[in-house]
Figure 1: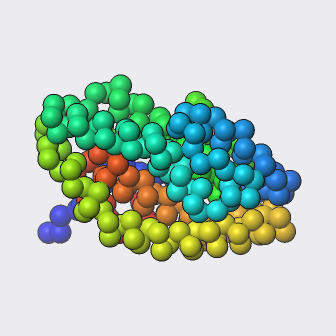
Figure 2 (figure 1 turned 60 degrees about the horizontal axis):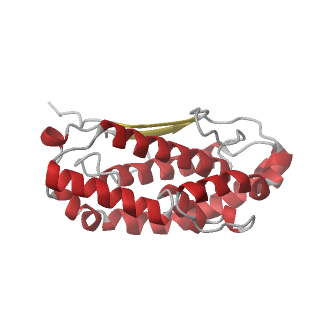
Length: 219
């Protein structure tokens, strides 16, 4: 009997939008600026994106890491708590999770996966879940020191796939302007990339699981 592999304790689903506004799509790079400014304030300055750079992959990577400064600070603080105290306070986990949800909503808006302007509270069409860990039971006390090394193969693959995501977003932008819809196959590819990235983040950055992420775009 084949043993079914346990579901990874972090997952992302984004509702397919159907018809989208051509006008909002055309000016997406400008419309996103206010919420990017809020994110920059939260993350200690961010990267100062403009309307052109808002659509490129380097800015998307900034969003996925919740801003360079705060991402490193959260990772370092979490690692220290796990290594020296074997704790991951629920309020700390909740803050990390909600910040990740917020940045993912912004990323989905930039990548044209939704027409809904990113909310600071509501999930909207972006459903992101990360399982809260039992630190002493589920997490190795010393593994946070080397997880970023173990995840390097994933980082390499994600960087390569990022070029495909950029191309898919450009194609989708033109497709929405012409047809009013995001091509379903491209949508699934981009969401799959976001899902893969989330699982790597849960493992190597948020440090919520010791389960090694699958090399997969699927659920």
